[in-house]
Image (cartoon, rainbow, N blue to C red; front, side):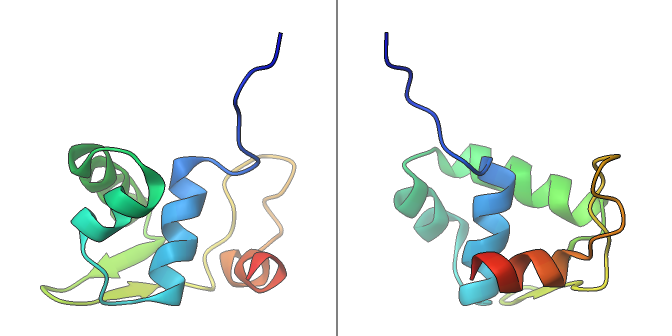
Length: 86
């Protein structure tokens, strides 16, 4: 049986999309990923609460100095991960 899965979570994908375009809308992110705009807004709120991003009315900013939360990767800054994946 083949299961459809992706290497990165939607949280990671949204972070990468925002990195590529700091002025992208939640609707455009939703269309890109094939998920609902409501789901995108929830994930953006999660990323803001964890201080991975800050958002103004028309622009996002990524905190590239923030460390990953997973216990095995806590020494890696998000900026380094983005560089590796980008």
